[in-house]
Length: 354
Image (cartoon, rainbow, N blue to C red):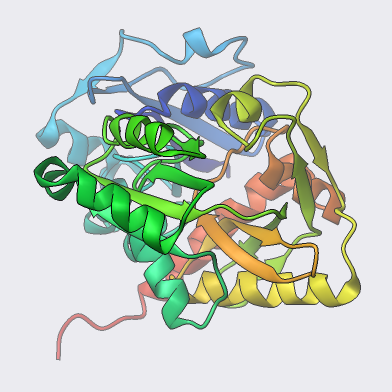
């Protein structure tokens, strides 16, 4: 019997194109002798369109961004994704808001469907960098100093916001939308004028921004895989020629180097693994995360963030980390699907009446 798999991809998000690349890579890696694959494309306007079953290789992402097919409205959506379909698992290949932030995960929970990746709480907390960092602080994880602002308070008194950044963090600092990934809307600031422009840029993508202290450090990442007993990959290092690893460096700059395994001491590696698992459990994660760290010249390890749906093409850091750890891309996908089924089965043990 084939595993009946539904892929969700696209999305009403600034990371729409990234999601299409991820979907193409996953489809190409899946064994059609093992899986029956139904695609559901979410276009940039947020419309859900169910396409024909995948029966062979997909040559390009345009073939996945279809307009023909069964368009989903709320009533049809629950019928299409509900128990009548017999889907064994849903694989949300969605990055950013309206997909990685717990919204889709909540819908799948209501439909009582198994799905790959993190649940509602972990997804929502992992998407909001302010909430995430607050939880990390509660868990005792070392991290850079940060402050946050919402658009209404900045509109009311932007001068006060700038003074707070300068007093508590100083320069350089990084301004980021709180709820976005793939380094969209992030700016490095070394003076007041750059800070002002960075706030304007970041507030285009979210109503909340976070500003972080800039430090001199290496950027080291680990992949975490599992449910209640997660395991870590080898470490990888990002070496970008730019000041920081921005959207272009991630998806269009061939000069950015990903070094796997990163050259770190045994002691630092053990600390990285311990902190990654602590972060995974602090957010109640499941399935996968990519944990991102700073390592200073003095070997001080600080957690930067976790990504609950990291870039997932074969050339993205998360799959590459696991490839070098001994888990190739098709096996990684199958392990995630199995973890989703196991977590769903565990949830079915919960009593809902007394």
